[in-house]
Image (tube, helix red, strand yellow):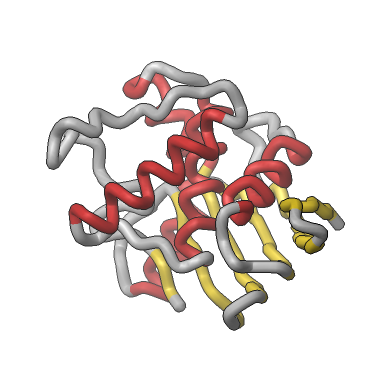
Length: 177
């Protein structure tokens, strides 16, 4: 269980369970747990239970087809199991294969690309979206702030309406509530 204190005397409790179901990438579980906490820092969520799975492309493809009827692998899937004003239970599934394949294109490591997927997926669970340009701008600003906590620069061209990078989550995003 991971706990963080956001200040003002309130206590935020975030439980993160990680299942590493792939063999392509060494996974820094502490870093991914920290990413989940950081992504939830600026949200009203006070209690969260997040299940995070790191899988390969065939697995995420199968899940994407089964749950969202999309017949292709993707980078991240998010599933809200239960959400109230101050609590959140959800699942985030990320593809290590996609992270490895995409990282060099954006000039950083596969670990950093995977970190972005985790942050993006958790933000979807917390209610952020990236379908419309104004929503995407808010989400990317939050991603930028989260990545900065890891000493990383955001890998999007925010001056362009479409920076050439598909939305994290594949075409149209991959979130199920």
